[in-house]
Image 1: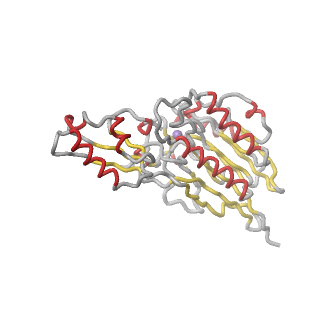
Image 2: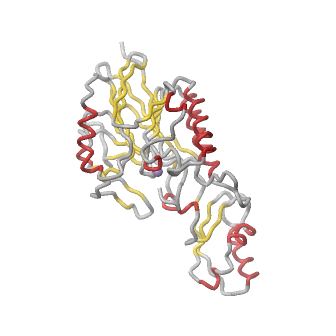
Image 3: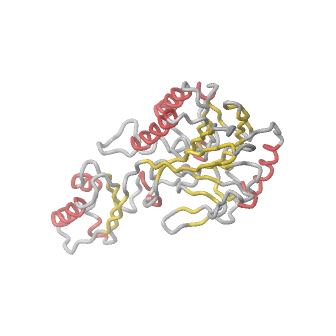
Length: 346
Ligand SMILES: [Mn+2]
């Protein structure tokens, strides 16, 4: 009799909740924070609707280390509500969590598992033994520390049908940015040859572009696939052309062993990002205003627009207030080079 069971894992990461979500906004304008929460909610609902067996969050739950209490409550409320559905959720503390998460009832919930140190959880899903190993983000020299972390995780020899490794790190070969910057040999980069062969899949946050390593991955490789789901919304212009989403990962039984069967990337809505190069022959304020306004009207009104202007005399006219006045209310628009929420580091 063929075994018709499927074990379904959902992987998402880099949700950066709290990004552009001011508690007491000083100016009235469209905020990007809602888009992050809306994709986050979509993913949790997807897990419930699709009867996912295990959810893994690959880290950077929040947008930075110090989080306003209100944001923490908004996030934890959602997670606790989700936990009531009985789907176990594993969270890897990322660099934005300083490798740990704010303490609360959340950390006590029996369906929420947080990798606050290198550890392995084993459990049984409909008779299938699944183990999840993981460790919090390592800030300094993960390159040298990685092997000993894996050795420590391997001390746990509880047998499992499906073995997963969860982390929040950069791995050699990972690519980011418009010019495909490739991580190679920094001390903060794990060597691809060091990835342990005895896991069925490696799930990681940290890299905001969705990708699977090694690039030419085949199921016959010694190295298991390393899956980066990427961030759930664009956090900076470096991500302007990237698809955003999360992974559904299916394991099936071929009659003898459990194998990775399907890696499915599920897309999420992400707002368009547009670069606008601006120049005007005239230094007359109202001419500049009219010209820029007509250019902005040609752009998707849902876009995040970055204006690039190299002429200092024209630039003087382009105040934040003017930009807000002439752009559609649904658009986020700002001048390149001015410190802005969309210029934040990962
Ligand atoms: Mn991140």
